[in-house]
Image (cartoon, rainbow, N blue to C red):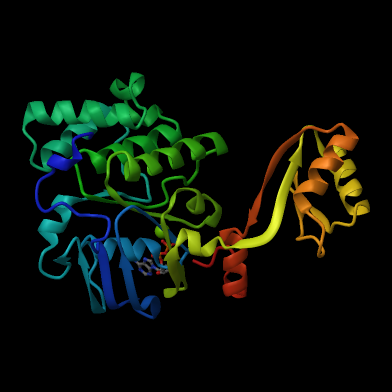
Length: 329
Ligand SMILES: Nc1ncnc2c1ncn2[C@@H]1O[C@H](COP(=O)(O)OP(=O)(O)O)[C@@H](O)[C@H]1O
Ligand SMILES: [Mg+2]
């Protein structure tokens, strides 16, 4: 997976359009799953965010040519989904949302099989499978039947089969679903690496905004089948002008520090383990006051950085009705 520059077909630069939809619409009978979507996605990692039922999986299936749109059109890596599905599936990997793993087969057998299906010869398939299973962190367990795997291991096996044919773009549908916080963080690191180290364009879905904010270069927000917003992650995370400060210790130290900062004339409020300090009135330096106050109290200053808005805040501002993570499907 390291020799990306030698990939088959035209190399997709970061600036090139990876996904482009025009008026894309999908109805399942009375259900309007997607409505008139115009989306443009470039290289790198793109997060596709929306509550359950927003239309994320439907969009992915249409882009893969597994579902036909009701109307509208789309291109993936420059190929038309209506007429060039075969090309698209050759260059695109897919990690489906739901469990698709045969329980009595090992990850190694399964991934080798998927590699053969995509046209690799026997020895190349074995080599690529071993590589890819190592990259996703399934080494020791790869010869055991997948029925005995934890959810985290199953997600890794699903991811491995989506990468084994060396795609230029991969769709990851809810890769962190069902994972505990540690496994979730591991999976997110892996998603980031697929984009940055292996140079594969990634479209990753989640109903949790916070986790996509950590790994995505670009975020697309769907709300009940409508495009709510599409922008670079940095544009979501405008600075607020406040400063986030944190001292060594627990809530006792945090509160002692906060009270002293307030007494020194600053407006502040707790934010998790830290304190968000508003810009100071004219003539006062927040930095100086924070530093001096910590020194006076004998508290160690461990963080002092500009505060940023988070995707959750932006999403709540933009769409009060579509609060993160709510189930509607
Ligand atoms: N095969 C189907 N038949 C009928 N309705 C469907 C089908 N698949 C999805 N839907 C509906 O389409 C909407 C979008 O679903 P989906 O694309 O799965 O959303 P998401 O992946 O964001 O949770 C939901 O209202 C869902 O109930
Ligand atoms: Mg889904």
